[in-house]
Image (cartoon, rainbow, N blue to C red; front, side):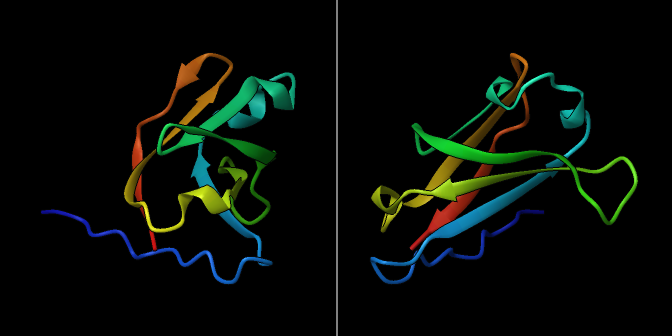
Length: 94
């Protein structure tokens, strides 16, 4: 079976779009700077990395999507926490 990414529309030039990623073990980091993310080979700003409030044991990472990703199509999303790289995720940017 395969999955097809739902396109993310970055909207108008003045809009900001955020992507939330979910996993486990992220809350065990000692500083936010230990969490890095890149999308399409471009480093993106990590705004939050810690517990997700709705489900026990689930962690959340919020990143801001840069305008430079507009029209790139399928891009690889890579998350690293304290030097450990998570599984790569593909997103589609319109």
